[in-house]
Length: 354
Image 1 (cartoon, rainbow, N blue to C red):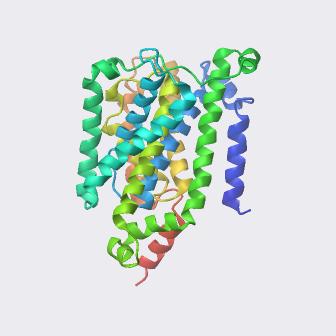
Image 2 (cartoon, rainbow, N blue to C red; image 1 turned 180 degrees about the vertical axis):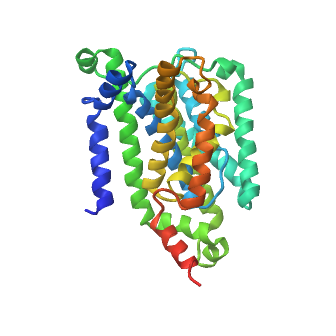
Image 3 (cartoon, rainbow, N blue to C red; image 1 turned 120 degrees about the horizontal axis):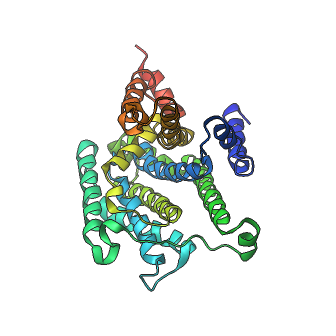
């Protein structure tokens, strides 16, 4: 076991045990007097890490510049809502929605990928960006189905045995179930993608990314590979959407899934390292940790010391400035990301030789 694998095992063990030993929450509570609720924030980070892994299939492995991943995220969330809320007769429950939402998102991915097979680069980015906006506006205007700006709610929690509900209490049992379900799916996808990277299927993605013409001359079918990348990435985004909606107990309004979500997930991939599994997960933890955990904590500290009237006491006044500055510094000093893929590091070293 090398150092990176040992670190990954240690981090996973800490995440598994944290709900039982919330030491960071206790420390922040004693220092600031307000709870951190890191356990709830970690569920959100796990879900967005899953979403970033789906985008990494398309951008990192296949080299398809996709700017509409939020659309498939929304499709997964609203599919879950339609199939589980009391308004509709389906009510297949959380576990059934976990199968249906990725399937619906994969079909949407194929529908987007089929007419855009010949597009690459900026042209593909523009089409996928437009697709994301079309889906958002469509969900907003189909009020008879999606309840428009209100969203669908309440989405029921995962079914749990009565023994678990009695042992932990209903609210605590649901919170723990979402925590460990999200973590389990994240770990499962990491294992699957590690195996895929060494398989013929994964190498075909890399061949397409490096040179489409050369991959076709070697007997690969670029059109089929692109469709597979669109479908796999969209299905994973749909899975993340199902988890997200269930965790919130609502689909949220369609405007939530706007272009900013797609860019945020793309930044997770870029910051961590395009095509790098540990890099994408690290990028998600860094970006979402700053946005969901660090920014509110700093804001509370500023409010307690300088008062609520201080302009810096509101995270929205400064967090994008910090975020933008960090991105500029990353592109200047770590253009390959925090944990770049070994293949990209080798290519960068080879390209730097005279």
